[in-house]
Image 1 (cartoon, rainbow, N blue to C red):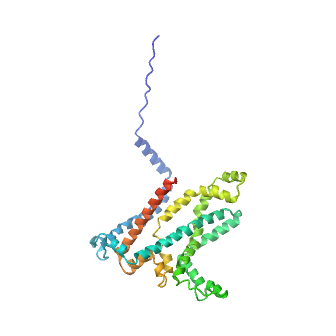
Image 2: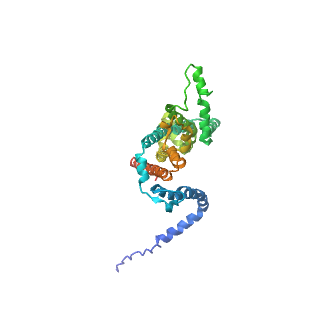
Image 3: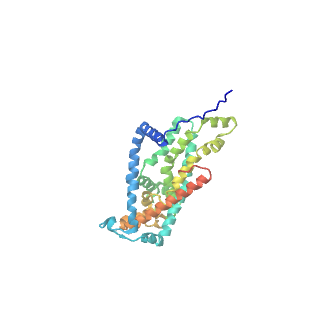
Length: 322
């Protein structure tokens, strides 16, 4: 009997992967073309207002003169950075900035989470939407309006808070000029204006939680607090960490307008922060190179903080922001 030898199976050579991936990429781009068109305004915004201005960072290494331009100004290297770290007021300004940032992290940051959990517990649709709208509204007011409302309430001349203090037999307090009241006023205004708006992402994350988890926990006898602790908070933990990392990036960037509106000659010692100092040194005194060096320093610190906290979050098993 003749022995049959198995012939090796001939596998056709696949086309180069680059051709296939290129074709699939073109199809995907064409299929989602409208989405990419919608991206254009956002991409242009970041290119025009975020990336192109980075060219101006060059003047932080120059003795910049507007009439000479960037190309004609004298190169001075790290002179302005050295001045920044040897400035007598720098440590005080840096300390004020870090204290306000610490208050934002420790006091303000948890409040939108707590508020979102409370709003999620409201069962009536009407009341839930009503209170959501109520806490969202302050976000659409400018800081000028917020500070003006505070001024009317705490002023010594007819302010409702001081009038109540006087009515109950206490002495009036000059909140606006007292250095000790600047930081409490600052954080209260931040909470009132931003806490409601900060709940939006958390409420969206809570809405995405599988209702079956809550039903199963109720069958096991879990109350509302246990459901929040063991289901809701773990489900939104990734969102909380992501927003925390992004918040850390603004460690030296508290915003100019709010603090500047509260700043005066009496509370300057505790109210002067890096943003207001940049305005004073850069625009009012014309020290463009020095103020740019301060802004560059802020950006570097923010980048380092984001990278560090993101790496720590990955070490503990979270995804991070990249």
